[in-house]
Amino acid sequence: MEIEASTGITLYGTPRSRALRVSWLLEELGVDWQFCFLNFAKGDNRSEEYLALNPSGKMPVITDGDFALTESAAILQYLAEKYGNGAFLPEPGTEQAGLHHQWVSFVICELEQPLWSMGKHRFALPEEQRVDAMLPVAKFEFDKAAKIAELWVPETGYVCGDELTIADILLTQTLLWATVFEQTIPPKLTAYRDRVKQRPAMTKALEKSEAIAKAAQEE
Image (cartoon, rainbow, N blue to C red; front, side, top):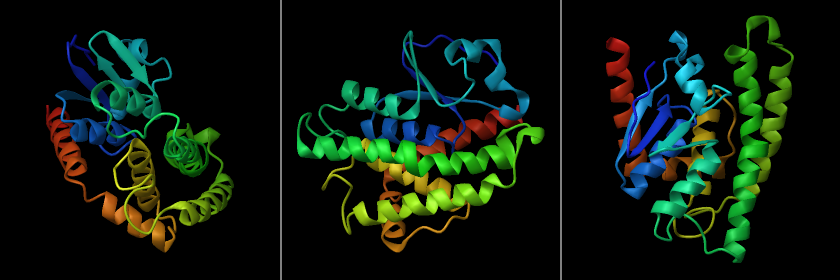
């Protein structure tokens, strides 16, 4: 895998992974960005060039000129602050900002982690490290977190009011992940997921990244 120097924003990952969170926000922001598809089957994430960007080999990563950043929530925060012109984040110091911090922490620490445990013990870990008994434990943890999210999520709009924030992107992508993993999602959360995923920017982000990934795999 060759990583080319770029003066703009480049996103590294696969289309429907956590990288979707970043590609979605980039489309919402309307900034120019490039997508670098990581073919894990070929070990792109273990190449010397990629490990120089992220020593863990995980995705996503962005480069913005010479600056490299990992961890999807941090990337979203950085992009919204730098390019959002006040959008996608509540005003600092307000109750809405506190609610937003709560949602971001909850999604990353409570709702997503059981899904990642499922993924690790289904396919991500070496076979000798996978433990089938972890799967029902992870399901129990996800169901517990989903019940809390069901209490918190509004009947209409977004989690912090009438405007989309990065918490909505994190929550919706995580719920889409849960859907792929065939988890039971409560009705209000399901309705929330279904209305937020209709945003044109998410569709554009997927179309762009999937087209690039397909072309890379056909080379």
